[in-house]
Length: 186
Ligand SMILES: *[C@@H]1O[C@H](CO)[C@@H](O)[C@H](O)[C@H]1NC(C)=O
Image (tube, rainbow, N blue to C red; front, side, top):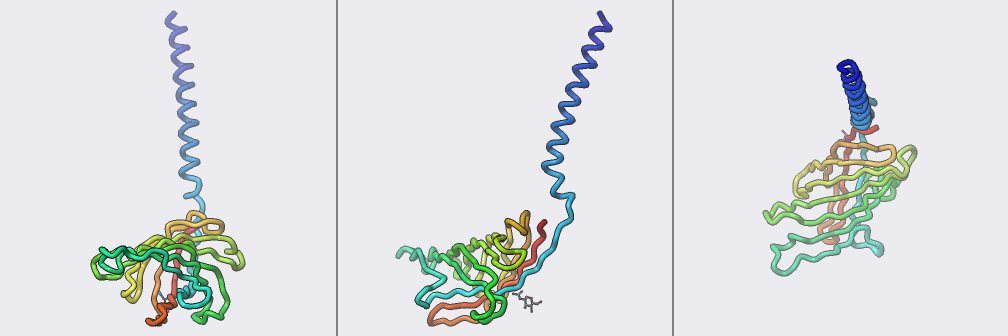
């Protein structure tokens, strides 16, 4: 009798261990495999054009702050801005910045909340996207915003963007921002 129980005990224990082993290796493959691959590091440089005054503006104000707002807290814009290789709008277009930004501070510091998908149309990056979500204090000379993800060539992207206003026209509101984006991805 004792030996039958010990054999059963051994069988059940080894079965449980093997199940647990499978579960562990599944979890490990889900979590560990991507991290085992080497990361690519990519730096992108481009210019971003806010165009408010043309016949086809690329930036539209879609929400006006309510009258009880400390203007312009709440003002919200939607963008489909061209991204160019050089500062000149007529230089090569490498992609677009599609998303929204809103004045999200009541502290008088002009801090925007930006959520923008950069979609690229060139070479090996064609159709790949990067998503930027962050705080943009537009009066600061250089602003840093996190890159929180990407698709295509930029899967698993993580990094940051630095943006600087290189040209601004106060009558139209048109602006050109220089961007340096640094990311790790696969
Ligand atoms: C982007 O990088 C270039 C080259 O290093 C530098 O001259 C420029 O000031 C940078 N701009 C921003 C916004 O970081």
